[in-house]
Length: 297
Image (cartoon, rainbow, N blue to C red; front, side, top):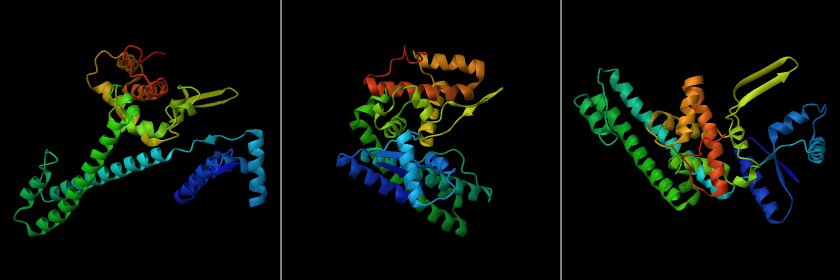
């Protein structure tokens, strides 16, 4: 039996629940990527529910479909937690930058400050101006609330990381912290669903696009398909490795040689893809990061 993943969040949740219930009863169920199914239906002159069912059955018989992995409930919950944390973090930054921008219009420069001293610095600058005091007081209440909520998310995320052996294993890799490891583990969910670790880089859109037809053969930029949050997390880890002191790692040496030939940006993307492959192999084998063999071909 085939189920299509819809773009609607509500339909997606229903589809996942239906998938889990049907698998629990022992039925053979596959999730199909709706974008691929839609492209296959473009040649159909008359679209109806009956024709859709017939075409899906034909796709299943011929094997012209790409199955989609349905993540476990634990992975979905962790993904929701990371998304909420990122949202609160971005709104906190928005409030801070808005306060800086408002005060700059009156010739008041906040300057460099720490998170704990930010509110005090704002109050110091607006003292004596009744209008600015009202604005700052309201925004600082929002700022403090977001700070508390972000601290709560951080505490919960780190607690989960300490209790998860897979996350602790990935954190043995240079540049990989709690957020990067949790994001990666949540996206992979089941390492066995990949036949080869090399396919993980392409799964997250870190491999170049290819167009070949006749005499035309073009290798483009990376495809940027798959989970954008994982791609961003891996790039941040690669940036950390290439810009911070990391000793005794063949992985950094390999990336620095590549940077001298192709530039730092391309080297970071290549290192992000390499990290995706290496970290998947670590999850499969259950072994920590090996600095000497991290950049093996």
